[in-house]
Every structure is written in structure tokens, then in C-alpha cells.
Image (cartoon, rainbow, N blue to C red; front, side, top):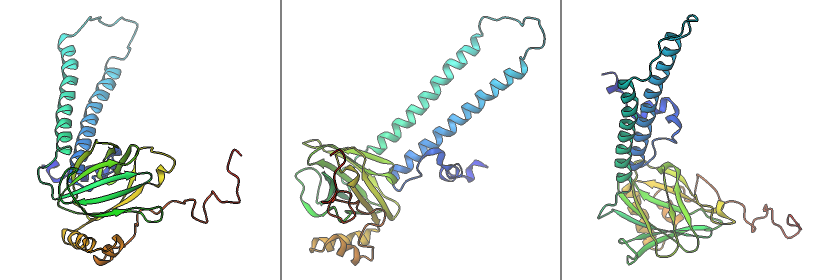
Length: 281
């Protein structure tokens, strides 16, 4: 009855999520979070039990004199216990891990939105598509630059499929609050995955694969909005509005707020100016 008044998230938050970044902002992230907290709790229970046995043995069987204690070669029930118990624990953890992993990787037949993620040195392009696969058409796009962080605007409460491709080398699409990332490969390989956002907000996105000199420049911002706002945003983009104009139309800050463009050679505060000498020369 006492435990029924608690939730895994409230329990985890009391202990700093046990090293996990947090519950996340998608349904898939919540399931991974629940698995993590449950696994840590199970590990703590086993640890406390083992520590208890150790201290009990230290106290109960401490040396009380010079008389040699009774010698035993083995204890069959005990050996069976500490052989079978770890196997059962690993089996249970494997079972629930397989369930959560399968659910996170699950693809629906008819996602609500399809976004093609195109990575290139050293920026992102997000194509809103009218269907799945390479043959689908791009309805509208958002492309980042060295001066403007690209915004990936998505609705909450809808199944969103990402289809990833790269124009050059391997990159990695990563939003920390999704508790998930997946590599972006060049060529014919197209990684796909789906998320269902459940919390509005703005979240920084990055490339998580060391892809070259300006790897740190590959930033973007995920903007989770309501379904109505997303529809208005997409309609404005289809009519020719820029991403910033469409964001203003739905009452949102037109530029990224979680990060900003890093210094480039074109900026006055850059380290690489015409009147300086590069290191090593």
C-alpha cells in the first residue's frame, strides 16, 4: 500500500535519477527510464542482501579463540542457491531489456509525420515528407547555416518517423532529452526510428559522431509544439515563409534559444584572422 502511492519517476527524482539524465520527453524515453530505475533498485536490493550476509558472517563467525572451527567442504543447497539466483536475475533483466528495446525500435505502418534528416559537413537539413521511403516527396524543408541554428519543429502526441541519410561522412542525430541517438550513414543506408513526443519545449540537438574539423558546429534545436501550432507552422512553410517567419506566426521565438552558432572564420572575433600566424608556422 505504501509503494502504490509512489511512481518510478518520483522515486528516481529523489535520488538524482541514479545517474540517468531524466525521464525524457518521449514515450520511448519514459520506458527506458523506467527500466533503468527498476534495474538500479533491483541491484540495490541484491547489494544490500549481500552486504548483510558479509557483515553477519564477520560478526557471527569472528575468531573467539585458538580453537580451529569446524571445517566443511561444501554446502550443496547454498551452492545451488548462489548459482541459480544470479541466473534468474540476469534472465529477468534480459527479458525486460529485450521488451523495451523492441518497443523503442518499433516502427508503425502509418506514422503521423515523416521527417528526412539530411546531415552534411557541418550542418543539418530537415525535410518534411508526404510519405515514407526515398520515393516520397519533400513538402518543405529547413536548412541550417553557419549563422542560423536550424529548427526542427515537431508536434506532440503524434508518431514521428525519422529517416536519416548523409551527404558525405557518418554523422549522428542526437537530442539528449530523447535519451536516444542513431548514426546517419552516407550512401543507400537509411536508418529509421520513431518517437512520440509528450512534452512541449525546446531542446538542443547535436551531432554525436566525430565527423571532421567543425564537428562541434553541427547543432540544431528541437521545438516541440502542439498539433495546431505545428499545422500552422507547416502551412506557413508551404506558402513560402521562412522558418523564422513561420515560427513568428505561431507565436514562438524565431531563433534557437538552447544554443547559438559557434565562432567561424567569417566572424570578427574568430581566432583565424588575416593578421595572425597559425600555430606551428
